[in-house]
Structures are given as C-alpha cells and as structure tokens.
Length: 166
Image 1 (cartoon, rainbow, N blue to C red):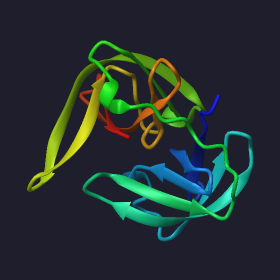
Image 2 (image 1 turned 135 degrees about the vertical axis):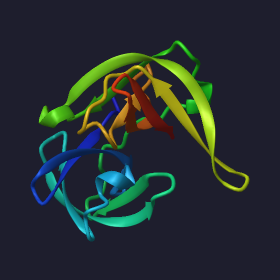
Image 3 (image 1 turned 90 degrees about the horizontal axis):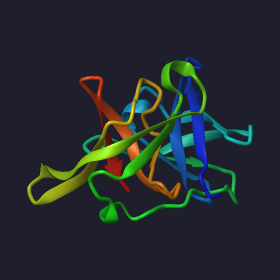
C-alpha cells in the first residue's frame, strides 16, 4: 500500500509520530515532537522493528525535523500532491492520541492557505476537522487514496486540526 509511519519515544515517555520520507533511512516529523531530544531517538516501525535514529536537521519556523537511521530499504510512504487538494475532501489522520497506538480519524478539509514565515517566504497549510489529540503530531494526513498530503501539526480550539503540506 505504501503507507508507513513510525512511532518513536524520547526517554521512553511519549509515543510520537513520523513518516518514512525516503527509503534510505530518512524520517520526517514535527520539530516540536523532537524538541527535547538531544541527538538520538528510538524508532519503532509499523512492522515492529526498533531502530536508533539521530536528529539530522530541524526547522523550528516550519516545525519540521528530519531524522536519520542506519537502516536502508525502508518502506517509504506514497506522497500525494497537496496542491491538488480541495475544500470538502476527505482526509485521514494516523497517530497515537493519548497513547492509543495507530488510531485513524477522519474528517474533511475546511480551508487551505498559506502563512508568511518571513519576507516573501510562505508555508502552505491544510485546516480540517480531523480529530487530533496529543500523540498525533508528526503523523501523516492522508487523502482518500491513502497518499500522504500533510503532516499533522497542531490543534486549535479542540475542533480544528492543522497539517503542514508536503
């Protein structure tokens, strides 16, 4: 199917999410979910394999982080074109809300937009009514074809979810 997410723990306290970005061992997640990690985190793939990963790069303004494992030939996710999304489309979020593993929630896109991050630099976002909770951050937002179109990033007011476009 092509959809693979990872779960990782920092100090064995919180389950968090990420997406296998490249089969050569690169994992994409939110910066805020690895903000407390110095350099290394433990990664558990959906097939149960546990790997060590290091924080390779961070972008706090975009709230993105890139992790790297030594594993190769990882099952990478299939990415959709977030520029083709439309308001009213079905989206699905996968995560570990409140510590419950691999929960899938569904909703619809309520807005698409851009926010200015710095002079003439914009970042796209997807707003939806997908139910998110602590533990969803960094996990995939999927379209109806199970393609990754965003990374779950934040919750507004308990009923609006925001994902970063990929």
